[in-house]
Image (cartoon, rainbow, N blue to C red; front, side, top):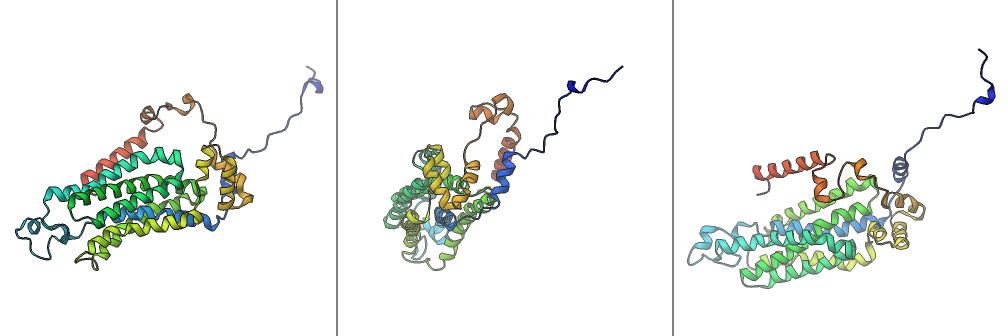
Length: 312
């Protein structure tokens, strides 16, 4: 049998190895050295979770509330120093009002963050920090004090729910984990510092200075953030304000890295529901195979924390 004529064949070449777009962006992102404005934006934002930690341990001095000392009549001078003679019920409300406020703030912050922008929300959140601190530091009755705690809690919840996304949207991919730790570190330091201050604020009106300290944190943010912090470029892109987003990216990373940053910030085309394996409805997505293990792991972790008393 004679061989086929050469003209029956088409010349082809083996395609070269294809580098995925995401890998290319990741490689380019590693070359980025952020400008100072990135770090000042993050540091200023982290003043607010510091307030959250501060409020957590603000009332932990034993002299403020000892059941036997506060129930004694007359109350011995130098004991039960915060609203002398308060009842257990009153103290419970004062302590837990902050938790209630934090719940409200964390639930509402997402809506207002998407509507106003991350930076603007954090700026207006300072008014809640100041309001809560002023109420607590100026009142002479425990019930208004509890109201101040609730207002401060709104600020804490809003900050905690917003800053994680804000820092993540400002940071290049290779720095997100490092800068993201700032939220926990700031909160933890905020819990520690009041315990140190108790050595100096253990008498007289010292508790008023403790209650009023968040005014300083809010004041610093409101004074410096207009010039030393930027809006989230991801939020600007979400609002179709592309030119403003480019200007912010230029300030963060330099003009030469604008296109690289846009590549990781702009939303990519999502696969179909069948390909992704989950529903477009968030509630239904929890039960999808894609997220089932993560959901069960988070649920188990939360239960373990409660049963072990770590959150007590």
